[in-house]
Structure formats: structure tokens, C-alpha cells
Image 1 (tube, each protein chain N blue to C red):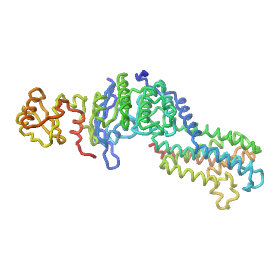
Image 2 (cartoon, each protein chain N blue to C red; image 1 turned 90 degrees about the horizontal axis):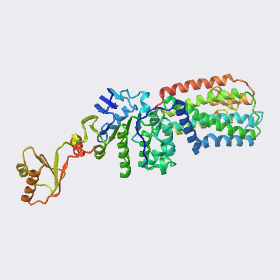
Image 3 (cartoon, chains in turn green, purple; image 1 turned 135 degrees about the horizontal axis):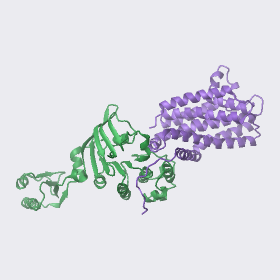
Length: 302
Length: 255
């Protein structure tokens, strides 16, 4: 049987006294897009850099395409986009991409890739004069030019404007369609929800949830509306069928969960009428990945 | 929109092609960099022209240009193999370039080989320019080109080892400062322009084992004195090369 793109078992990585990765296990399937989602400092980059062979795990098993990550045989098979840097400031955009292409036997055409990522007009621009988004796109181009089987993208859309972000998303979609395995880190929920077949949410160096975006957000729907803050929800809860939940979060935003159907909707609007409340922006929605993420990783800033 | 076939087709390029591509990129970067050019070409040529035309130094008999040309050639080798390479490599580490290249099929051995090829290519340009200027100033080289070439190669190895040792351990800014300082000290105390015979007798044994003194002394013995193989100088350079490359290989940090 073909080994998975990435398999991590009980991965541990410490820096001095701080534990960045704390017994993390995950599996990224071949040909799929796996998003590693987590707040800043959750251990995403440490995890990916161990897979890329840049760092050594303190303990645990790491297999990339079935091999230990420091195997030279992996280098042509794995494309890497670092979170930042990696390019000499004075080198011209096109020169860098052509240089990286020369390291591979059957690379993509550098000129076509520059056009595809909107960098053709900047081919002669030194790296340091590119905008942050252009630098990111060049790094993305360099990660895929060797036609790898597996690509690691560390926060590929950080600092991109909306057009560039969509161009990046389209490219990831094309990679997947071509059978390339993609592992990306992000803290953008919409990115994970849109791109990933499999989402792994990590926090404090551990996996806190994983699954497809749909399985993580659940089939459950929510009824949401806005009204004046501080309404008492007790009576509403009495009127709702058992197993329903109602909460105000944040102030003035009400969320009702449970069997969301015509009856529940009628109960809520009847209650609103009795309370003399005008419900604004009333909507029925699926839970978003952001809701799941905040539930799992907490709301406090750190 | 351009269609690109992303279907996986991974394979490394042949080793020689990777090394040559990286060497060409590094050579281009050096020749394009103004500060590097100042160090590798402009300063050596100015010293050569200035000190050979103006009677500022006492070279102890003989013609000034015959004394100066080998010293300036040695200085040029040091500026590229040591100073330039140390600074460039230090900043490559700082900017994550060494890390990024580590994720390509170019191995570390391949990268070091590419750096060596790039240094030799830049030295080739330096030698052509300096020899042309020196000949125009009336230089009449003697001795065996093989001996001179051997000295240049061993000198390059020794200075590369020292440069990589520094770049692999110090921060990029510290490397920049230290590499320039060492360049100045060795320029003054290594027999490049000022003959070692002018230094106090007590200092001379220490100065003579410096790699720059071995290179200037050796090149002078061959090109001005007509010696075949200056074994002492070759031995000193070989010892520096083995020592510095050995320690650099153990201590170099790629990230």
C-alpha cells in the first residue's frame, strides 16, 4: 500500500524549556490538501519544518512519502515554501526562479509560471524591491517549479491582497487536480474551509480536532439574529424544543442551536414579538470553521 | 490564463548542472555587487598603480612593480576567497538562502563546490585584470606558472576555510565587521605592500606563518625570484587549509 504523504506519530519538539510540539500525531493523505490550522505559536511552523527536514524532532516518528525527512532522495520530490525569506535580496525575480528550475530534471517553464502568478512584469526586479505579496508568490512559484509530488506551504497567503490570495487558492486547486499532495499551514479559517480536504486544528503543540471541513463544522445549523443586548433568554429556552441552546455572543448577537426548522423559527419570532424585539439580520447558517476554531482554542489573545 | 502541467514529475538535475547553475548565480552576484567589486578589483588595482608609480615604499632593491604585482595578486585572492565569501555567506545564512537551498536537490557538498567554482571564476577575472595592469606598468614575471597556480589554489582553499569558518559561526553583521578588519590587518602585516623585512625581527616569525604572508612570499619567490616550488609557503598554506576547512565543517551552522 502506498504510504501517506505525511505521517507523524507522537511528535515532540522542545526549544530549551519551551515545548513547541507536544505529542502531535497526524496523517496527510496522498493527492489531498491538508490544512494545519492553529493560532500563532501553536506549533504549525515547527511541525512543518520537521517534515521539511530543517529541524529534528526530539522524539516521535516522522515519515514523509514513507521516508525519514532528512533523506536526500526526498529533496526533488518535495517542494517547500518558507514562511518568509530564503531569497538573496539582490537577485532578480526571474533569475531566482530560473536558478531553482535548474536544480530539477523536468521543471515547469519559469516564464509561464511567472505569467501565471502575475510576476512576468517583475522578472527583472530585484527581490528586495518586490512587494510582500510578490515575494510570497515568487516563493510559491519556486516551491512548485520542480514538479514535486508533495508541497509544503507555510502560510502561503499571509500578506497577500485579495487578488493574489485567490490566485494562490486557484493554484492549490490545480495542484490537487494534478495529483500533488499539499500540506499548508494557515490561520485563515476561510482558506482551510475552501481549500482543504482534511483540516487538522492544533493548539499548544497538540491536535485538538481534525476531519473534513464539513465534519468539523457539523451538519448542525444555527439561527442567528441581532437585537438589543441583554435580552433574557430563559423564556425562549422554555418555549424551544428540548436539546436546543440559546446564547448571546458577543453582546447583541444571538445564536440559537438545535433542530433548526420551521417550528423553531416560528418559536423564535413569536418570542421576539412578545418581547417587543425587532430581530435584525436573521439568518440560518451552518457553523463556520471559525466558530469551531474559537470554541476549541479559546478567545483570549496570546 | 496559461496552462501549466503540475502533474508530478520529480527528479533532480544532474549534479554538474546544479553546481554550475549555482556557481554561475554566485559569480554573477559578486561581479554585480558594487562593494564586492571595490574590494576585489578596485582597491587591488589602485594599490598596484599607486604604489608602483609613487616612491612611497622601500621594497629593498629591485623594481617596485616586480615586488608589488605578486603581493597585489595575493591580496586579490584573499579579498575574494576570504572577505567576499565570508560576508556573502554570512548574509545568505541570515536571509535564509542557505536554508532554502537546503530544500532543493542541490546537496551541501554541491553548494560548497559551487561556491569554490564561483570564487575561482572571480579570481580568474581578477588575475586577468591585475596581470594586464601590471604588465602595462612594466612588470616582468619570472618562474613557473605551475608553482604560482598551485600557490593560488592552496591559498584559495585556506582563505575559503577561514571565511566559511567565520560566516558559519558569527552573526552576519559581526562577520561583515570582522572580515573587513581581518582584511585590513592582513593587508598591512602580510607583506602585500610593506615588506616583512621592515617589521621588527621579533615579530617576523609570527607574521611569516600568516596565510597571507605565505601567499605573498610564495608568489614573490616564484614570480620575482624565479623559484620552482616554494615548499615552505605551500606547507603553511596547506596547514591553514586543512585546519580551517576541518573546523568550519564541524562548526558551520546553516540556519
